[in-house]
Image 1 (tube, helix red, strand yellow):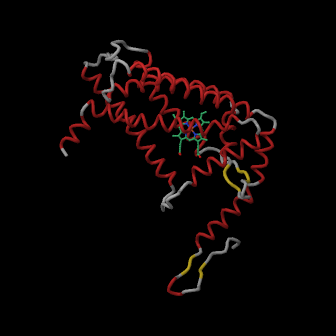
Image 2 (cartoon, helix red, strand yellow; image 1 turned 90 degrees about the horizontal axis):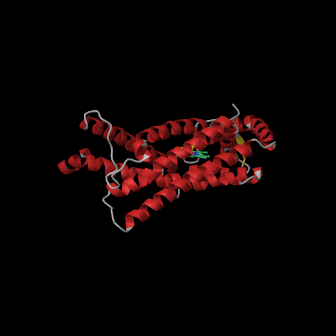
Image 3 (tube, protein in one colour; image 1 turned 90 degrees about the vertical axis):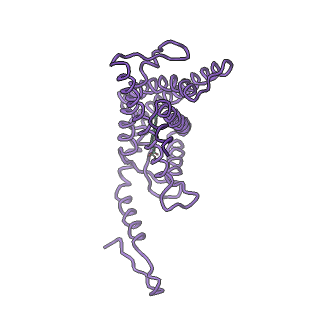
Length: 283
Ligand code: HEM
């Protein structure tokens, strides 16, 4: 037990945990980028249907029939990984500074030089944290547009929420800049993580470095292009009609929610057998 505490409180232990949580987050980012490529579809109706089917699938995915939806478990792991990664980054930064008597001095041990990405790691990381707060506030917890899915159900139109945010040129520009910062962060993080794990090899290290650069460029460009496409889509003439249609669905949606709540509240009392107690949505 003592060795775990020694490991967790050691500098290398903290760096390795940062590497592992960072790798997990980098994989999430890649998957997220691929899902968002559906925003590159310029046919509004089919883009709306496919993007919303994708977000509905993600939020409803529960193959093992857990009592709690899978998405909540995934979100919990994501929040934990982000929190641990950021906490350790700030802690290591403060400890490094203290150890050096407050003098900023950080070298890339392998290359023996300080790159722009190395120097800005903590700042690009804190910028990403700010970006994530904006991102979740505007999208996940943002405007609730509605649309009728293939099954005739009224569901949240995540596609419209997303493209509507990008309708604002300020937000679209902010995203393009943010993707550059995320690319910069990943650029140093990947080679640094391999180094921390002790993978330093004459033949493999240059290949890892190139793969790290390629990965960061792909992620930054992939998300950046998506942001520009969403800006273009949002400013198409058809978008206003979709917003109006969404508003007209609101009363029906409220009614549907009441009916669903009433269905959930109805239950059978086993000892009484056939008797079913239910609430009527119309009351
Ligand atoms: C053009 C760029 C991006 C677009 C269009 C986009 C779109 C979205 C949308 C629509 C959601 C809400 C999904 C839902 O609630 O159903 C979301 C959630 C999220 N996004 Fe992004 N995203 C982008 C870039 C990023 C980047 C770069 C990161 C990470 C640094 C990121 C991290 C997240 C996280 C952590 C969530 C919450 C996931 C969850 O709760 O399940 N996104 N994004």
